[in-house]
Length: 352
Ligand SMILES: C=CC1=C(C)c2cc3[nH]c(cc4nc(cc5[nH]c(cc1n2)c(C)c5CCC(=O)O)C(CCC(=O)O)=C4C)c(C)c3C=C
Ligand SMILES: [Fe+2]
Ligand SMILES: [Fe+2]
Image (cartoon, rainbow, N blue to C red; front, side, top):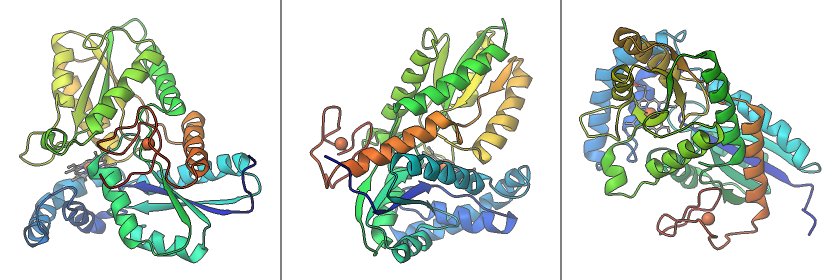
């Protein structure tokens, strides 16, 4: 069957968003903590709590963003990815008009603003594409729920849920890991895959598939980069804990301590982020580098986020094309998780 042409196709890229200056740090934090996917309390309790936490956290967070020039580089990085994806899709879908839009969850351009832009453009088809390789209720689900609540324009919609083991994503990461390990020369190093943490209860009680998908990403990268044994040559850890609840572990700091005991250096790989921002440039490059230095963990090397690595952008392009090829909602195929109604590659998420 020949693919239809002459369509207007909107690809909506979802990410978290980050404050663009010091003044926007507090409202950004408020939006984040007021999301029921982050704090699962009724609005009556959640909203005052979000006000309190964002006020308390403001100064520390501002200091962290000040280290990056005042605001987050996430939006410019995402704009670069959107432009690169448009170029890939112009090649893959000649005859169609493809435009990539950016919808951020907690700061500009906010989802409602982007939804209005997409509606005004009048697409025939829409592909919703979270810039999170692994699906979590706290990220992809929250972004998609917001989109579905606010989008009122035309177009048939398809969703890419996640791509934890997509070939180009794994290839881009594995290539970067190999380069960094080579930088270590003959000094012994352990590769630490560091993912943003989430509270453990989301996995244990709500069945959030994030941890399972992070594990599958890491195993695939380790295999492709030719790493040896988990625990000795590579391991998985979780960063950026917030609040008093128990989060997934071990923490990245604990994994660095373990490396100190084992007398090996580390190569840290941000495995759940596809761009640079406060969690990579400040937390990994400054805070954890200092911890490693204090503990004598040498070398401490960090793999850059994939950004616009051609293999990665190509995989996103492939996911978009694949989503468009699915006419309507297809039955879930092999490897799909019936309980979550998501598959490891691309699929429409439907109510359980
Ligand atoms: C895989 C990606 C992410 C998951 C999962 C996630 C869960 C999650 N995050 C918080 C709280 C904060 N996150 C913050 C920054 C931040 N988080 C992600 C990604 C994920 N979060 C990114 C990309 C960023 C950086 C944004 C930017 O600077 O551009 C922050 C703000 C920074 C800070 O104050 O430390 C908070 C707070 C929770 C509570 C959570 C799951 C429950
Ligand atoms: Fe976060
Ligand atoms: Fe599926």
